[in-house]
Amino acid sequence: MAQHEVLDIIEEITRKDGTKYFEIGNMVQNGRAELAAERDFIKEVRILQLNIPHSQNVAKYEDYVNEHYVMQDESMDHWDEWKKDDEAQEIVNSILKENHIA
Image 1 (cartoon, rainbow, N blue to C red):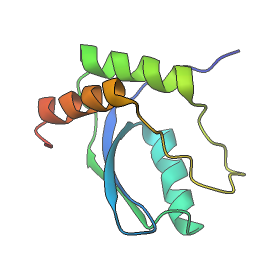
Image 2 (cartoon, rainbow, N blue to C red):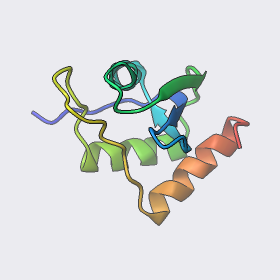
Image 3 (cartoon, rainbow, N blue to C red):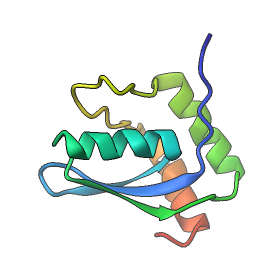
């Protein structure tokens, strides 16, 4: 059975090289990012906003994530950054603007 992740938080993730990116996630994904930081796959994850409104853009990005990715489990041996095509990145940018992050 396919999973359907509901996304409701905005995070800032710091890669090992020090560069940062924003991600729209949920508490399970955030927990995996915290575990990835503990295992030194990424440097850090910070929650910037909780319980973001479930806008049309969030629904579109959920569809993108659920179509392209599966939530990592606790046995992960690397951090699976959700790479975005141009359209998905534009949706994320819109979500950030809607929530006064960018």
